[in-house]
Amino acid sequence: MNVAIASHLREIDNLGRSLPSGTKWDAEARSNLRRAAQRLVHELEEPSDIVERVCFQALETAQIRIGVDLGIFRMLAESDTLLGPVQLADRIGADPVLLERVLRALASIGAISEVGEGSYISNKTSETFAIPQHTAEIKWYFDFLTPVWNHLPKWLAQTKYRTPVDSAHTAFHHVYKTSEDSQTFISKHPEYNNHSASNLGGTRTSWIDIYPIQDKLKDEERKNETSSTFVEIGGGLQREVSTLISRFPHLSLFVLQHSPAAVSNLELDGIEVIAHDILEPQPIRGARFYYLRHILYRSNDLDCIKILDELRLAMTPSYSRLLISEHIVPAEGASTHITHQDFNTMALTGGSERTEKQWRALLEKAGLEIKQIWQVNGEDGECLIEAMVSETGRIRNLLHRTRSSLK
Image (tube, rainbow, N blue to C red; front, side, top):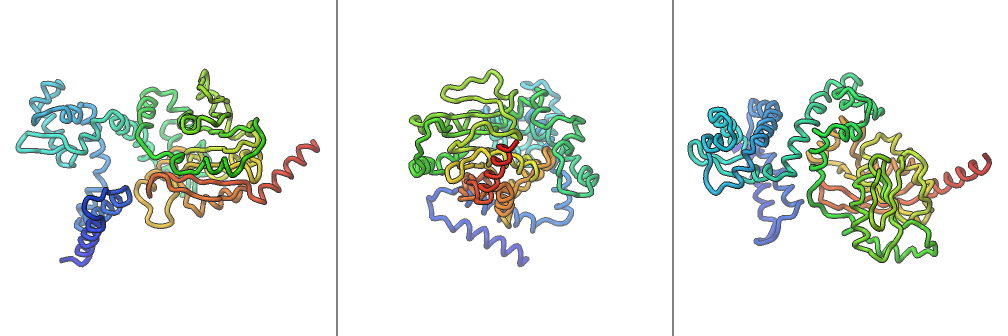
């Protein structure tokens, strides 16, 4: 047997034996076993297999998209019996000959299961794409993002392979011929916006379950009843603030900030809603917590420093804490999930996912220092970065106030 193949088989066997019988597989264990299985599959491939796998990935996504459009996954998931092209044709109103080709293709890529000639049933993949949230996702990725990804090689060549520094000129802007940022553009196009909004669902561990916020409040009691306890800037609108209110009802003064368009006519119980441009001076001074979720990854380093500078100027040293929810790229062995997110961000906004070293350097340039990092959702999930004003940042704040007073 090929030495490499034998090695991969032993690795898979060892991973399978690593958990005692009856132990629940956690996300990391599943990820490790999945990666090992993928390495085995790749080792078994001939060069022609590799070329076909890589070159036809986009076509397989198109086949899934056709299955979604025809409602095949939903009908199979809801059926108690085997279905074939004739039965599905009666329900859909499509040509049974064409349906037979579609079903055959979907079965060949594991999207549905073939049980005898011309008979099909649902499986884990088809059940996934029968769920409305995932139906929206495949439409979102295929319709909106794929054209941008396809243009990325040409766009990078045109930039002479330089790290993006202009968020107004990305592969997205070239494809859709717009000067608007991607979020603004999407909000004006219902055919994309509806899928994007549906794509925001799903369950995830909240950083609130991990971060010891109550201990921070007890450790830093301060007689300043007018200080805003928690300020969420952009991100998921009321999601995090609402969770905090329900979890800590005795706390008060929660502020949600977003663009004027996002908060227009928005009223939330127990939350002060403020329209705010993130690049402008932060109007809430001396808050105990400032929170950014999935904001900085969209921007290049220069724009990130502008955002962080404004927050640092508003923060009270040794008291205010900046909480940042972002993905952190591991120093080695990065997963496809995180590298996919990195390239998608590059194509849409010119931003990037960052390693821990890069996050520390970025925050240091803005006069902030990382106090601790919590991993929230496993190796591929986001982390919570806690930062405070550094000594260098404190001096910068004093110099800024002095200059401002002299004007």
